[in-house]
Amino acid sequence: MKILQIIPSLGSGGAERLVVDLCNEMADQGQDVTLCIVQNPEEEDYGFYLHELHESVRFISLNQKKGFTFRNISSLQKMIREISPDIVHVHLSAILYLYVLSLVNLNTCFYHTLHNLAEKTCDNSVLKLMNYFYFSLGIIKVITISEECDISYQKFYKLRNATMINNGRKANLPSINYPSVREEINHLKKQDSDLVFIHVARYHRQKNQELLIRVFNRLEKEGISYLLLVLGDWSFCEEAKELAQTANKNIHFLGTKKNVSDYLFLSDAFCMTSLYEGMPISLLEALSCGCTPVCTPVGGIKDIVQDGITGFLSENLSEDAYYTCIKRYMIQKDNINRKVLIKLFEDKYSIEYCAGHHISLYSSKKQISHKINFKYPQL
Image (cartoon, rainbow, N blue to C red):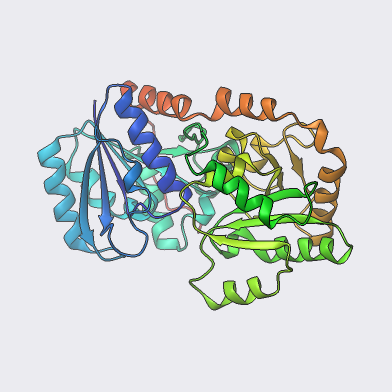
C-alpha cells in the first residue's frame, strides 16, 4: 500500500515519537510510506526525531510556520495527487486539513488518531461539531490508542465506530553513551544504595509536575536519600523555571536527551504524576527498559499498570496519595520483576504489534455503511 502520514511537526512529543516509529516499521514490513510534516523542521525542535527516520521512508516538509493556513490545503492536495496514496493518516491538529481533503479525494481512505482523551483533543464546540460530522459518517475513520481513550471517544462524541489500537514503541537498547550516563548518575548519588527515580516530560500543566516536586521535597525533608532525574525541556517558560527552583538538591534537571533509554535502564522507578493521559509513549519506553512505573491512575496508564504487579498506582491525584504510592514502592520494589515488565511490553506494546494492527486495518478498507439520521449533538 501507499501510505501517507501527516503530522504538524516532529517535535519531542509522544505522538511525534509514535509516528516516526510507525513509519519506520511499516516501511520495514514492505509498505510504501511517506511522512509529511507541515512545519519547518529547522525551527525550534520541530525536527527533533527526524534523524531517526529510516531512508526507506520518503520525507516531505511544507516548511511552514506553526498554525493552520489555507495555503497548506493546496500544497497537501498537490502532494496527494502526485503520490496517489491508498491511505492518508493524520495526527494532532493536521486533522483540520482533512475537512477539505477528504471530500475531494473520494478514492482515498482517511484516518485520524486521537492521541489523548477525546475531550482533551477538541477545545471548542465548532471543531467538535465538525469532527462529529466526519466521524459519524465514516468520512474520517478514527483510531484510539487505549481502552480509556476509546471510552472517552464514545462518551464525548456519542459514537462507537472507532478502532482501538494500543500505542507502540520500538524496543530500546543502550546507546554508546550508556557508560558515560552510568558514570554521571553514580556521580550524582549521595550513596551507592540510593534509589534512582526518573521523570521524562517537558514542563506542562497536564503532567502535574508540581505534585512530583512537592512529594519528593517531602521525602527529602524526612531524611530519605534518593535521586530524581528530570528529563525534558523546562527552560521555555517562567512557571517551569520557578518550579525547578523549589526543588531540593536530590532533584536534577538534565534537559532534553536523545538517549533517554540509557537513563531508563539505569533507573529504578519511572514517575508520572499526570492529570490525564491517553497512553504515554514515555511509559512504554520505561516498560521496555524494565523500569518500574509509579503513576497516578489516569487515562491509558490504568490499562498498563496493575497495582503491585506491573507497577504502582496512587489512589487518587492528591499529594498524600502519590506520597504513599512512592513509599509503597520503596517497601515493595522487589515484588516487581524487570523481566515481567519487558515481557509485557513485547507482548502488547511493541511497535511491531502496533504497526501490524494498523496495516491490517488499512488493508481491510471496509466501507461500513451506517444508517445515520444525522443530527447535531448536544455540545
